Length: 134
Image 1: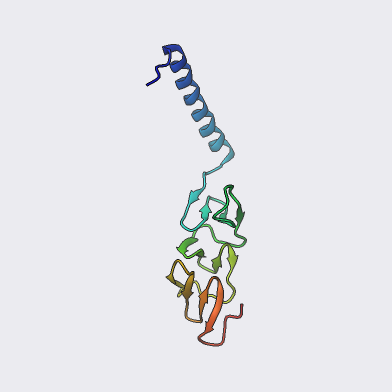
Image 2: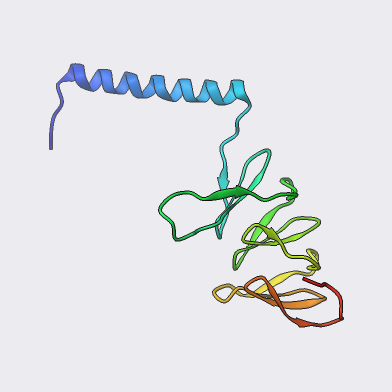
C-alpha cells in the first residue's frame, strides 16, 4: 500500500470536499436535478425524459423524448417506455399504441402487445382491431 504524506492526504481530502460542496451549490442554485437512470437506456430528470439511441456505444447518445410526460413516464423493458398518454420505442412514439394496456411479453426480442396490436421491435406485427396505424 502506498502511503501519502499527511500534508498531501489532507489537501486531497479538502479538495474533494470543496468540489462536492461547489457541485451541490451549483445544482441548487441552477435548479438542476441529476438524472435518474431507468432500465433499457432511459434516463429522467425533473424536466425531460431521455432515451439512449445507441446502447452499445462507448459514449452517451441520449436524446430528449419529445412529448414524454416526466411525472408518469416509466421504462417497461424491451426498449419500450410508457407515460400516461403514449408508448415509446427507443424514445420514438409508437403511434396507435395504448399506454393503459401495453405490456412487454418478451424483453430480449422487444415483443409487446396492447388491446389494439402486437409489436416486435417497435413495429406492428398483428392488428387485433384494425386500429392503431403505425
